[in-house]
Length: 172
Image 1 (spheres, one colour):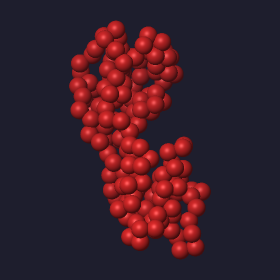
Image 2 (cartoon, rainbow, N blue to C red; image 1 turned 60 degrees about the vertical axis):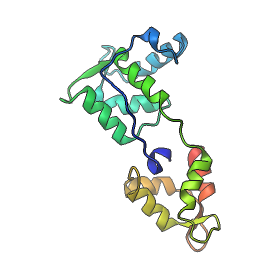
Image 3 (cartoon, one colour; image 1 turned 90 degrees about the vertical axis):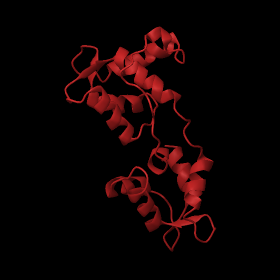
Image 4 (tube, rainbow, N blue to C red; image 1 turned 120 degrees about the vertical axis):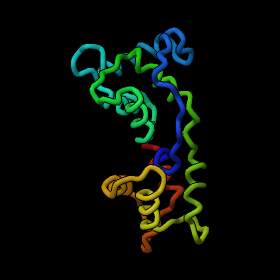
């Protein structure tokens, strides 16, 4: 939800490869676990992944980059679209992503949606929430919004309790 409602811009240099031992935030065990996860995306068995997989690997490792962030990283790493990168090249990207600003809290998201609560009653119209998700921040497709809103309760007037909505999304 954070990446959808409150996109961020991350500044990092993906061309500067820091040696593994300088990745101070990660312990040796952390690095080994991350390398094992990285290896799951290595389809050729050569210790490398396609640059197009960077976003998937980051998300598998618990990061939540926006599509814009992933596109920038990939464009910086591989303007040709043909490059494969090693874990050693990937680790500084992961390190940079893990050092960026903390994800927003549940309260931050509720506060962001409160702006659209015209009556101040804790509810937002389902149509307005759909509009926010498809037109602001990192825009979602109608299909993505349908998935997101699937199972979300609304009252007889089509109003959604946005605090409950945020709790539901953040628990997934």
